[in-house]
Image (cartoon, rainbow, N blue to C red; front, side, top):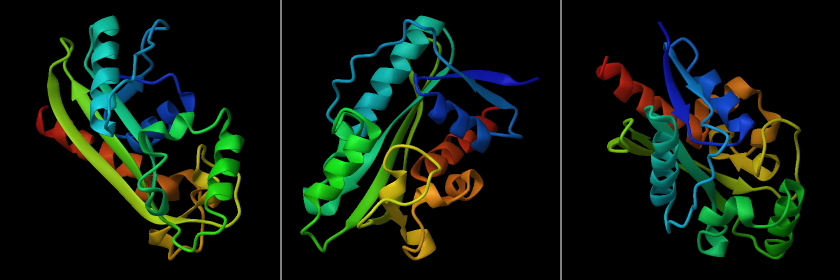
Length: 193
């Protein structure tokens, strides 16, 4: 029998991505109730993922998992960081702004960070972890897969030859920050069965 865990997001892309990674584990992630609208006022990825997980468990009365993720660019002192989704109004504007800010910069080093928090149905922390994916920001966007900053993120894992948006979903999930964090969560859940 499949175990259902609430994944604290309103982002259907993210839900699809983590269910793809969890395929074959006996765990299925589901969306929180429609009223899910946490106040993400933490100062770290970890704090924000805890806020989201606790809000999802409060509403659903189920075990809940949340991630908070973003892009940290070395030349921008780690920005946009926890504000990655709010860096500009739309995904394309966020990419345009990032490329514009970095246009005169040779230091293109960056990393995707994903903090995950798993809480029980009462909101108590069961497990917390972090996944990171290192790379560089490309000079122009390329590829149509993925979402967010994927079209401008060249991964170290492909020797900076491919953006995440040029990879198949399967290739991306093997190396992504979210994939790395989620595999640790699934490993933890597996030991608790």
